[in-house]
Length: 168
Image (cartoon, one colour):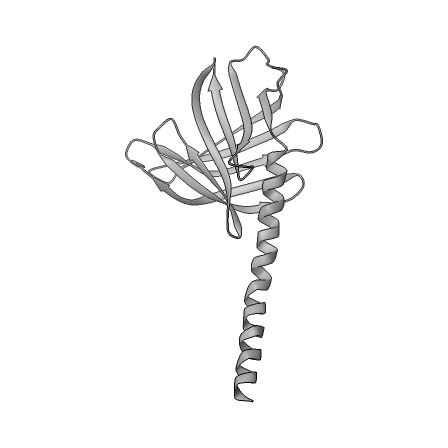
């Protein structure tokens, strides 16, 4: 009888522990699927002659989304998005040479937000690093891509782009 109670208690603890993780996994999965809808080429809204292009593509059987920036045809930077258990990570490979990792903080049908987790190969004396990243869009309308870079003294430097699908 004691074995039966122990087994039942272990099963209950396991079920309780798995419950929230499953909900988190669903949120990460939904956000990742929503990001994948960005596949294709994007340009600054109303500026097709501008040399900036941002391309989104999947690889590794759809388990990673690649965001690749080019300027006048030359590679500039990239960010990789992938699941990690119950969250979604974004690793940005910056032209400054550092690689910040950000984790999903919220995801809805209209907005997906990432916040800083850690950074590799970062020199705070001479570099900034991406600290926050968000995407906002609905339907076929423009994509708002916002980010905050943080410098070695802790000051934030926000920026944003309004993008539209490129014809090319």
